[in-house]
Length: 140
Image (cartoon, rainbow, N blue to C red; front, side):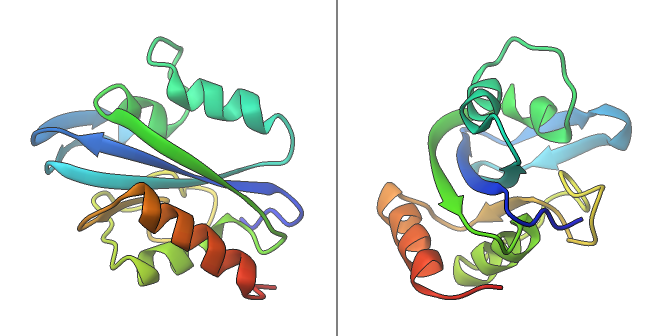
């Protein structure tokens, strides 16, 4: 479900070796070593949401919580746009040639393939460029 007028964010996570991770009731999945981007939104409380994603010790509420405890935090970017997280997810996956390791992970309330994307390679510079390209274009 699109959330217009919300703050969007991308969290860059890294898995250092292939891992079998149980994602709540979805089941157990194999996650190859590599870079992952999680796309989300917050209508309010963005800094608290990002702090929650950063923490490892917490009650698991969302799909990303299960994945996060098995991945290291690298960086996050914030996007102030009204287009919604689904548009940012598609834009990010297309631009960075992303794949979806688990169907509907993080996107159970919309029709996106997933909001967790595995990308072939990642750097802070690529994330900064993603942010710049997003902000320079109109996605409404």
